[in-house]
Length: 217
Length: 259
Image (cartoon, rainbow over all chains, first blue to last red; front, side):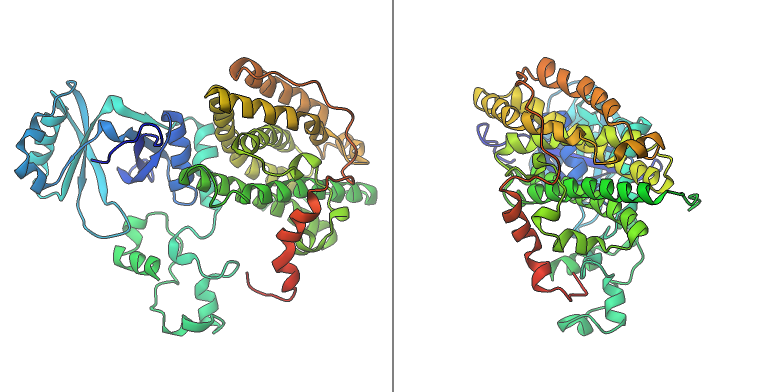
């Protein structure tokens, strides 16, 4: 667990993003923020300025219980973690691919506490690489009124450079420059892939290795 | 695009160009001030957030200058990066140095509230291209306003030190804020034609939004109103060095095709 330095460090919040109404909430990363409203505002800036989204959840790190199969085996007391009896959200990590977290929220369980929720998550998703549970009451969520959706999420649709690999030379699409032979230096030895069309669902559209590869350069 | 082709008289065109340029100049200069925090904001998340806000404001300047280009053919980049300080028509309010975080957040808040309300009114413009731009920019401005209102509140209600800094920022900014609501020369005619919003009405709404937030919600004291502000052709000593830095690369490479 991360050590918290109360004098210098704001709490950490895990952010879950929903790309569209029909898709699951997915963990996208974390922000540090002083309070729930601040967490959502910074999350919007950090994670959905360009990618598509219709809703964000923020959950304080302290409210989340996470375990890998190895941790579950070596620390059975995790399944005794006490807490409130209520509905818990369950997230499972399904891939070790880099650059995305690949934790989807897959449903809820009614549990006597976080430990019990973790136990049920493990039973229902035996092959996961990690389980994550948090009580429903811990969620701070963006409003779903039209005004919020319009001002928080709609502007992203009009933005260019929605994915990392679109960042070539600002002003021209990198693929366009390559095709016309105007990309300086290493351009000619680059792998194909930068010519992808815009897509709002990185999990679907791009193999993670490729994205990580682009970042590494 | 189904925009009807607006018909403006020659005089109206001149005034609209003047207004669009003033609006864009405010955005450009404020964006530059916001950009000065990149890599220096209190935490990474706010660094990103302020860079986003600054980039949005610059984007709005681009929208206004594209509207101008449609009228007189001037290139937006050339307007932003080759005009000298005495050709800029920004308000002195946006020229002031970035100051501390309280000053930055409070200025951005006062500006966001003004811009959001102006854009909200401009969505009704009889000049269709402006109404479209206002619709687009309004969404972003609403979000900016939420973010900066949150910060002003937390700084004002935070510690004695943050309260002192926020009040000092308000004292420093207040005399300059009225200039945002000054019409440009000839603006009356475009108001009558329904092309531009009524600045007095925008100011009334701004007062209704901002004054209770600052005083009731945040516990700040309103300084006395400043003296009548000079026009937008008069600048502080801070504009020249700002433009020197902002325009340096463009001026060094006037023929650059790619940025």
